[in-house]
Amino acid sequence: MVSPVDDFYKNVEKYQQEFEDYMNNKSKRGRKRKNKMYFTPVTEKAIVAYNKEKEYSKRNRVYSQHIHYPVWKLAQNIINRFKFPYMNGTTEDKQYEVIGFLLQKLPKYTEDKGRAFSYFSIVAKNYCIQTNNKAYKLLKSKTDLLAVDKQRDTVNEEAQNSRKESLKDFTDLFVENYDERVESIFSKNSDIKIAYAVMELFRRRENIEKYNKKALYVLIREMTDEKTQDISRVVNIIKKDFKEKYRIYEQTAH
Image 1 (spheres, rainbow, N blue to C red):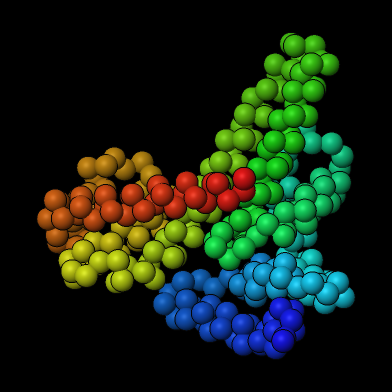
Image 2 (cartoon, rainbow, N blue to C red):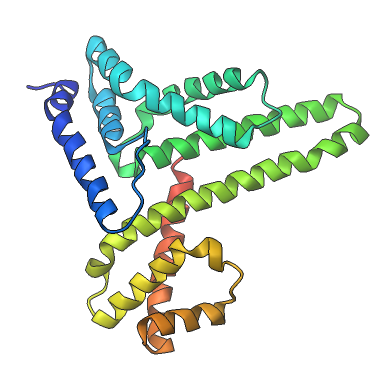
């Protein structure tokens, strides 16, 4: 019987080619290709193989060759982006602390928990938020309240920024996934047209976030030439799916 890691290495070139083909296809569809992706579907398959493998030497091989750098880079990016000022140590110390925590959580990942990058990003962010908040509470108990008052807004701001980033990351993933499933979810051409229009507005959300609900419906109606009641029906289906999947997305870290 072929071991999980041996099976991974037997198919790794195929996995890599599938990923390359997928990215090239996205480029042809007019989407900018992300050339510097460090955490890919190949990384995800390596983690699955690592978790299933019983032989230490094989686990060590696949970890060092396909998992260590993506996990290291993920931790580095999260620390650099959010800073988490109350966590102890230097930026590098914080990074290695996060890596250590992620390695403890590595065996808990299974394919049914969604994309590995999303899962471990949420795990890392939540860990940092909790650690940062605990450190802040400790500081608060030892520091003059007037001095702490000046720093309090920073902690809240960091937590809010982290939640915003989490929602942004999820929305990007949701749009990419939903865009590929639209024609399997909706059967009527009019509904499909509306769903694609909604996905397009999701992509442009940073430029249209000041629009009110009525204005967005007008935009969709102009893009599709469909009736408002039909637009509302499709939007409600997408909204329900979005809320349900975001709830699951947030829970993956717990």
